[in-house]
Length: 259
Ligand code: IPD
Image (cartoon, rainbow, N blue to C red; front, side, top):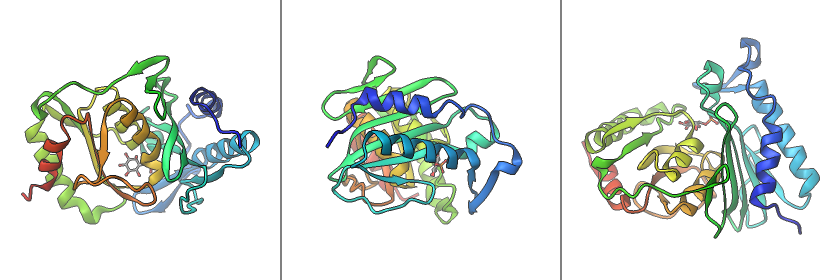
């Protein structure tokens, strides 16, 4: 079976992103859930990437955010979020990415996260490090939360978690230099890999939001678990606590604080 290299997936994603820079018109935006939108471009990008992958790697399975939620098995499977940061895309924030991972035995082995607005291409291959463009990236060397900026996700489609999300945001705000809310979880994980954030947390993410970013982070020297410090299963939606590794214990302590 032929499997892609990191550079082959970078090229494929770059090609698929060519039409992605124009914000959608109102007619192209539809609500698929509470505060959860899909644009014609999400659908078109998923269709384009899926057909490019099927042509080049016909034996691999496919899972995509837009209605193709097959359960991840041990078989080689591409996991795609065609536009991670759809709300940013709709409102012109220029912080959205195509996030693509190849998973084998339920863990990512090749990953690409590409923001066409900034032309930042993050990528990684298991055992071979992480890259921003052609440059190797590594996590922050900070050893105290007070030395870093924390990325936070707000799980906007699950407002039942509002109280906990805001409490965590407050606790990180008090422990760190400041907090940031990018609106694209895959980019948050890459920003942690590239030492922009020291840590990143989000209460509930789906595998297409975090699979690629998780590999890019760990290959850059970082760590990713749930809020209790347990390893991720990649088979399900879960809490995400990500860090440079050194700060992980301190991060988990903040996440365990009640009040
Ligand atoms: C969303 C973004 C956002 C995060 C949400 C995700 P989508 O992905 O990553 O930052 O807070 O939890 O669902 O819906 O734009 O692909």
